Length: 304
Image 1 (spheres, rainbow, N blue to C red):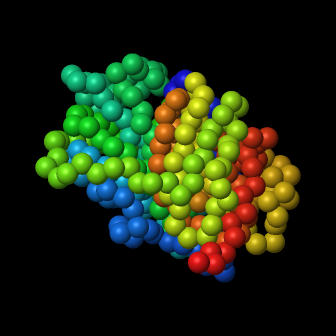
Image 2: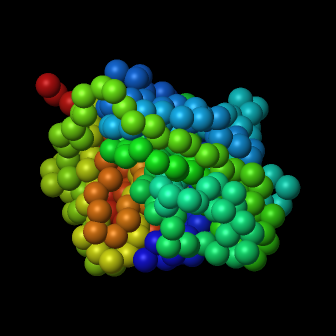
């Protein structure tokens, strides 16, 4: 189940790394303000190979907002495009970081999780993955909203976990961080009401409850299967239709990672908030965005 995504997805890291392109002249939406997200907003910054985040937070409704501050930002400033944005030292996904929020059983620690990874264990029964924000090309950020109970957690980047070259496994490079969730004093907040429900069914097929409008959209992703799936969007740049984009070879570009979720565990629901410009996107649940289960989504201008 959970192991499947760590095998098929993280083995490739960001499968479309060769397709990354900055957005030019498309009215790109940047970093979402705290007031547009839900619950307590916890900023997590990711670089090579670290997370910057609080050591402890109160329990309750929490949105983790992931911001890239490493290699990819430097390369964007230098005018790089395509694979050069995240590739470095022979690793095509070195600069592409994602976040998994992991709940650890009582008596287990971040050191236990690291030792398990060193021993080649990608999945352990005492570490439960809750989901997390996927990669978004700066200046975009990505996020996940979770209802956290008190306990011990880990913030982990599993990119590269199934590669034979263990030096490409971000967790083993030190990309993990302990997080303690303490009892909260504030009144318990409820999960936000979704604007759209995205159902994942057998094979990773996606069913959207309604068309996606431009602007901020709260999406609850419901996984109705026994498998763990990711859920991600890529923007189809000007000059290509969605159909033309999907028809290109798997390693072709361009495409703009627009955020989403690293993981939607089996028989669970995970919420994310995404700001969309109008235009064509592709949404998918498999590592290659050009996959038979991916579908084209046209976001119409918001006329409200």
